Length: 112
Image 1 (cartoon, rainbow, N blue to C red):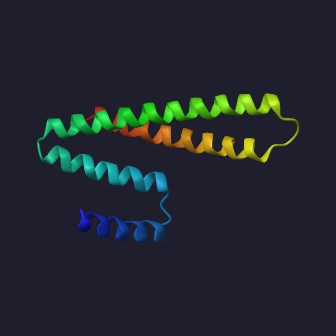
Image 2: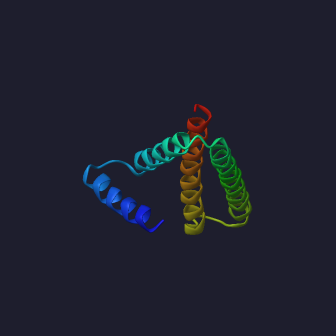
């Protein structure tokens, strides 16, 4: 675990120098992890990974739904520009980006 952490820090520094996006970096790491799981011939590990990803997708979708509900509630009760609403909208966009990444990961693992 400790060695993997150091390895990931070094990779982060190299990816930053290469100007690779965070999303691309994350997908490269994920593909590497999938290759390791596949080489180990452990179907159960792949199934657990798929279960984990599905769980994360559900969590992110629930969070997006909750934030959108909060915005509707706040925007109906407030007048004019509300910095809190803008912040929540940014959070929703970040969550949608995360959701897209988790769905890509799920598709990747299904294709194995």
